[in-house]
Image (cartoon, rainbow, N blue to C red; front, side, top):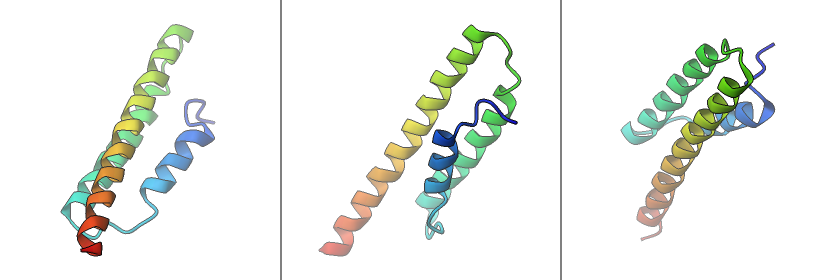
Length: 83
C-alpha cells in the first residue's frame, strides 16, 4: 500500500522501538523516530520519479541519523555499566 515504506524502513522502525525507553535520551530518540515515521507517511504522496528519489535520500538520511544517535547513546550507556 505505501510504496516508500519498504521492508528496510519498517525493520529500522521496529529496531528503534525494540526496547522500552528507560530515560529521557531514549525517549527523545523514540520521539524522533515516530515523527520521522509521520514524515514518511506525508512524503509518500509524492508522485514524480525524481521527487521519489529525493524522498528516499531524505528518508535514508533521517534513519541513518537516528540509528547513529541510538548507537552512540547505547555505547556510552554500556561503558558506564561496565565501570
